[in-house]
Image (cartoon, rainbow, N blue to C red; front, side, top):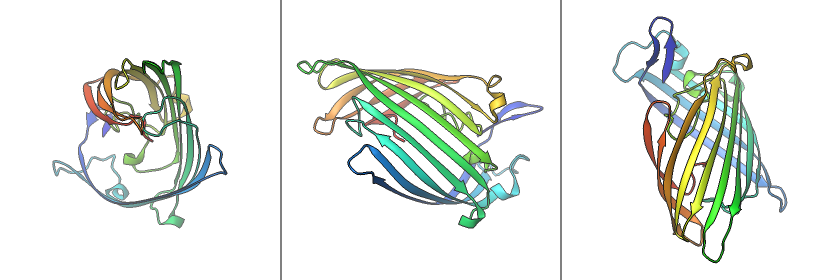
Length: 252
């Protein structure tokens, strides 16, 4: 995790976290439509320590050292994708609203809104040769109300950017992925995106844009399921990273 401190600026902190997790999820399709509704429950008991055994920094509260988090939420989803592994067309839109409260056994009182959309659009199709150009767009917005432990704050989630590198109570990002199937089995992928993490809407203008971009390759491993696998190389503001992809990189 990263924190900006008054005297030293930005500093990296490495923690050991022991977690006992429970996650329950149930969803029901509405008739034969593309709409789904459901509920989800998350519980976690977390114990926290610095990896180098030093004293915990001042910005870590006593409650965060050992605490329980318990969330209950509602889910609404629309999914018209033609495939769940590597879609060629369709739309997936998702929103869930979770509440953490002492009523559910949590040590924290907060609410969390998480929403995202994936849209796949074929820009060029040739069924005879299998040469296709599939354009994908991703939008993601997260908003947290109240006070939650620092390790649960939303963060920018894109290839090339480490997890929890850019955190804030409000996160917004947009990403695109362009896939070119130059044979029936082999494809190339180009992607890029931008996002912001901030703590209040008034901070949007002063918050820095975070970017990432990269390229990769795909192989159609299972034609019946349209399952593609491959490797991506991504670059963020600080470093390069590689990813082994099974199906899709957008998997929420």
